[in-house]
Length: 173
Image 1 (cartoon, rainbow, N blue to C red):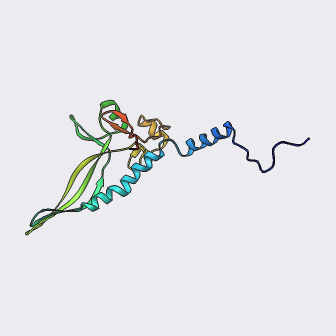
Image 2 (cartoon, rainbow, N blue to C red):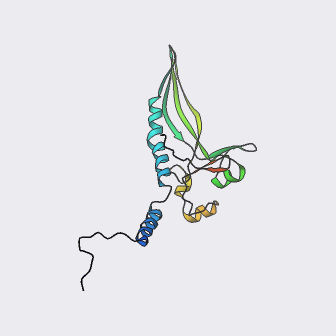
Image 3 (cartoon, rainbow, N blue to C red):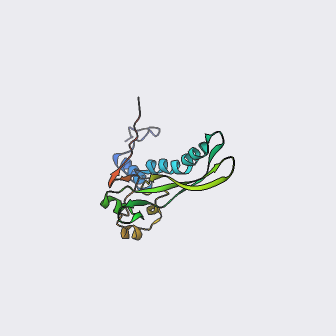
């Protein structure tokens, strides 16, 4: 008895095959990898480029501002009772705070007479959970549990005023 399927005919994957591929993709890549990669690229590439592009600002005929360097601090929040305090994502969720880190720039002002150098806080940069600048990304599972975080949480979102927020990319037609 001969088979009706020729040896050159293509075999289609079964639904079980597709679920196996999907399972391995989610397990090793995750659903939020594109969010984390995009944010990390912003921090590593675009932020330094923006600062470099605006590193010299002419204020007046004889006064110029030079941005020398920048530094991203640890996640902090301004709390009325204490002032600026290091915070965790759990604390931000419970106290309706924003999980953000200060961005400092080193500037020098040059003029006719003298040069002065300053370290200035430019802004509070929201931190994406589990990104490269988030302390959670460097913690072990037991440390995450100690800090009230789920070790299985993939991250890829922000905490703004205590609420978890995700940026959704939309294509304009």
